[in-house]
Image (cartoon, rainbow, N blue to C red):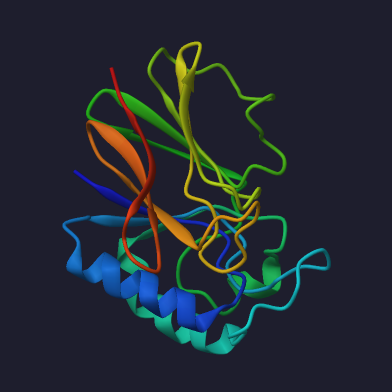
Length: 182
């Protein structure tokens, strides 16, 4: 099983559509969205292609394939227009025997994780900076942001498989970084 991982769309329709075109062509089964779907928030610049209503109409037809968590820019009003649940600050699923713990990363952070079994994956966004590494017994994976990347990264997304997590550049699909699972 493979998961396509997005975070921090922030209402940018151009980046959202580009990412979803890649998702549809991929062999991924599920789309994991790590929050901040529609709005840009007070600390971010307005995305170039800010059209949250179009993001809604683009994501809703895929609702059966989406598992999402709440970001710091998401609220109850967003849930009223999205056809998939977004208000939980965390979610958990399993890939084979490996636990995947999802959170946007603003309330549950790498420094405040709940107890996780050895080899678990912590998926988060929020920082807009891609990461993929293992520390102690947990893999920390962040796909970056498809709309408002930081620290000179390009817009990016991730693919989570049984064997690794890889972050790709949204513009040219080149690999930005990867971590292999033991």
